[in-house]
Image 1 (cartoon, protein in one colour):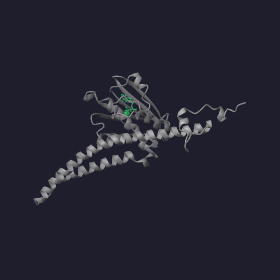
Image 2 (image 1 turned 90 degrees about the horizontal axis):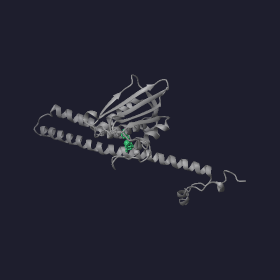
Image 3 (image 1 turned 45 degrees about the vertical axis):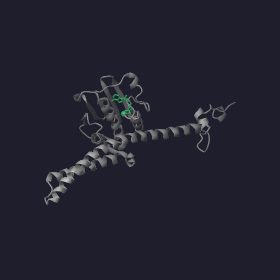
Image 4 (image 1 turned 135 degrees about the vertical axis):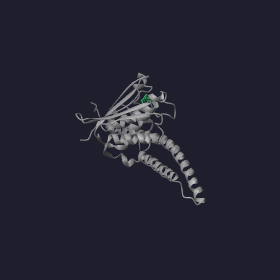
Length: 280
Ligand code: ADP
Ligand code: MG
């Protein structure tokens, strides 16, 4: 009689594990242990992909913020030259030049804060916050970085704050991905049609915070729609998309007992609806 848990009765591990069975990290042969091992490996891969998406976002943001910083630095350098010229002539600086300096410095500080905010792992801890506050932060951050320069974002805020408990950074990552997708979908639309609607409302009965990010952009045919949550699935040109965005969004939502639904029609537009538990 064979014992179901006996290693000799278990199916052979997949070939790629057979070939890597050298050294200390070789996978166990016992089925239970193997399952645990594989779950651990899956968790590691998941964490790496989440980080990859964060870094890709950070990379494109850093590039566009770098561009912005350059512009601000040029303005500051110009203004400093005016002030210096005045000083050489024994004249006080013009009030508007001083105001430009103040604005420029405030601008630089804002950029620095945005960059710090985006990459801080410390902010991965769960916190209680208002969803709309995150939406506003993300809109500012994307605007400053130039990612949403050509679109209008209209927010439909709830009458009272909708509070949730999760990592603020992760909810930011969700909105960054959904809003950049919507902005990408709108690039070929005429200027007046480049609008993204973001709606947040509280479903008090079910204790859920419901969010919608909607665009009337290019939309998706069914064969694209059915693959959007796959890792590395992208229809964008190399360098424009990683194909991780919606996978990340879904993974982050799954982790907080959230749900997501994508409705889309080619040539019409897309609505992404998701919800997360509201705090009591
Ligand atoms: P990426 O944006 O890097 O391509 P995502 O996972 O965010 O990866 O999206 C996967 C694909 O889903 C996109 O390449 C695009 O084809 C499609 N998609 C996602 N959001 C939208 C949208 N709002 N409108 C049209 N297509 C979209
Ligand atoms: Mg994307």
